[in-house]
Image 1 (tube, helix red, strand yellow):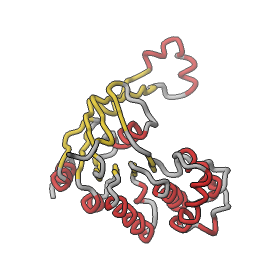
Image 2 (cartoon, one colour):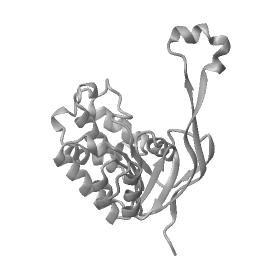
Image 3 (cartoon, one colour):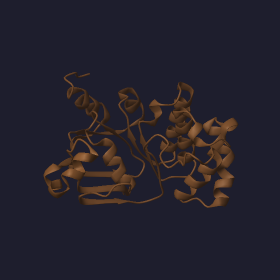
Length: 247
């Protein structure tokens, strides 16, 4: 019997409305004809995707292909315009730099806030707190307001929280590109540990070498459509072929 499905998308499309007015003044002047100044932009069209437990899948594509939108739909941050998204298990997501952190709260306060949002009790967070801080490597700044953190510090703390809430499904969007090399290696080791434990990982990255190392499957997005879903090496060749270069 095969592994159960953790994520399933059926016919998923996502539309955004883009305002073509050039300024707030123009919007106010054109309020009666605002519909004429709107355009529909389809970030995703008719996406079918099933991800089984224990899979590490890479989402690849050039900027604007719909990768981050797809990840946000899976994470429940966005709702599809049409189609359905289903998911099972505890989710942890690191989708944007500093996402979910309140800039005026300290690192310590944000750890407890984010862990609570991800489903941990205060007691569970206290039990994991020292491991989170140790993994992040920002112990000297844990009681400093996050608005004073560098981008690398914010990513390190966010990733540390995400991987210590015992997730069944981990969503990662380009964050490994921000941390220093030592922290990237630590994150890769943690991802490999998750893989050995049979957890499911959805990984967005432009770093083909990293995708090749970590992912056992690749889905390629192009202008909002999924043009390939399958074996990693073939998926990466498909991706590079979009730019006219094949490996």
